[in-house]
Image (cartoon, rainbow, N blue to C red; front, side):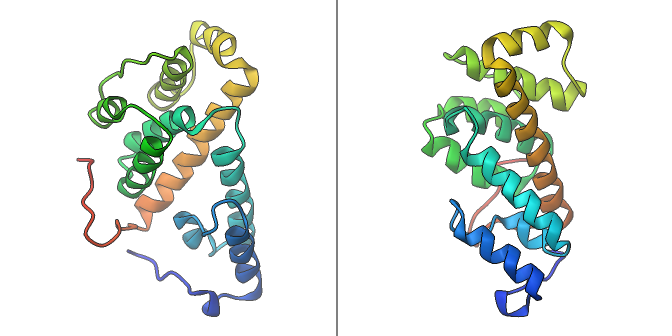
Length: 181
């Protein structure tokens, strides 16, 4: 870890206010990257709020939103992000074969057309830096405009998360080994 993470007692008033807001939310604990973001408390506050919306309040159940998050974590080879969200994806009911395919950069087979579309959109955003007109039109049809917007938000937010975790070299919990090479 390149960064000394502050304990609540070491935080200034603005950092502590942001920290306290994060633990009062649905997560019940501060998200790992927020501890780095506290170096810019106002950014940390807004980023954490956005993360809460994207994690808990999109139109998608975890089984689907975690597809975009795992594609993002894999794109960035974000070991901590992959570790955290693989568990959440499994808990949300994602087929372990889909997780394995994303990990190995293979296109998974989805039973759900929304799952397939979320994967296709996330992959296109990361690898192609946008969507072709055909993919855009199909995404709006399958996901709705709100759904497409939220997938873009998931990919963008978790890109920032992955970049933060990678830059500050957040390690996995004691005894855990990364699945990603």
